[in-house]
Length: 497
Image 1: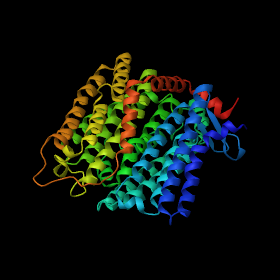
Image 2 (image 1 turned 180 degrees about the horizontal axis):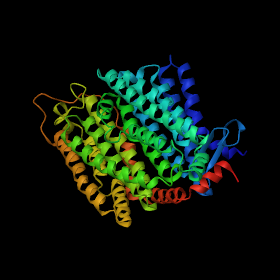
Image 3 (image 1 turned 90 degrees about the vertical axis):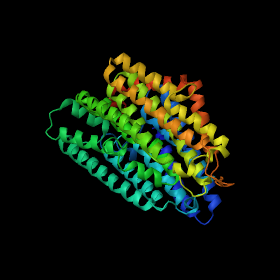
Image 4 (image 1 turned 90 degrees about the horizontal axis):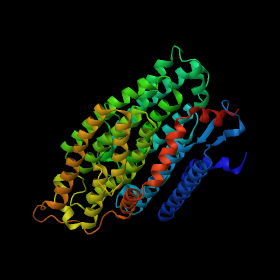
């Protein structure tokens, strides 16, 4: 086994080990924070090396834990899809720590904040890189526990209530996932995804297979807060600390997206047509419902949480169309949305930190932005990205998505999502107009200090960079879609032969 094989291990081990060391540094707040940022940046560098290695070679990096060959041991598999999502998530997570370093929230000073943030990063990255369904469950549980505690200790008085909602919804998702795991293991005697894909293709008539697919589908619906399992998300993201909610609403929800891609391209190829049809229906419903919810809400963070429901809907529609170009569109959309949504939530948190009463409610923020022009410029660019206006990366999202819909001949669902896209323009313009154009109430002024804008500024720079120079990401997404179209190559890489 060459050293290259350990590249897939490093993005998981670095934040996990760093979390344990961060606990030992709990009495030294600045040192603990600096250590956590250094660890997250190191992990991001390892993820970039993994992606470069996989993209250059055209083959995944596979690590067989304990030296046990698949399918007997647990495999970690860094293929193009997993490596791309690992880079996406860890880039945003690193900037989440940068935001926390400049945050005025009391929660970021707690000894457990940065260790929990690092375990959240390890859980999400591990879920992307594992090649075993039960191991995915384990990493997802690490993610859930970290996110629940980080929300429960929020400065917001509703943090505990939101944490309970998230925990119990995640508990339901865990139950669905375990039922799927049990059904598949009883039917096929394996949980290695490569071996499972091969076994399902050889015996698609197993009695428990339809139930397993339904349970797995439901689990990923909850993970991504897909309509109608979305109702916990606005409360959760509104009450979470900004540094946390920006992660949960941008990259953590992509776990379900990842699951749906694996289901339709690897695990259940023969049943993929039915799964994709459901994804298109749910995606269109999410785009419409999320857009209407964002238009009608009273809080900037809550608006952005509903916006995530709508944006994930676009991604599900692309996965549902299922063509190589549509899958590339889904990957581009997922990557670009992560940057824009994290930036927008950080800006909403920064505004709330400068409000007379710390809240993102529009009644309090009305007119406050007139005293914060830099935040206004960043918010405008991020909003244009959500709408899909050039020169932002959001324009690339919509262009590739609409092209894929036309290529696939999916004119009905394409027309539905195109019409619903107007809702994005409505709620973004409404929010900008209320915060930066209306006059504030007499005597209302912004606090002199608040959360720093460095992290959202860097994310917005990424939004513009990928809008002006989209070729690398689009090429990577197309290469990933081409790889996903050859599931036998994944199976052979993991199992050998």
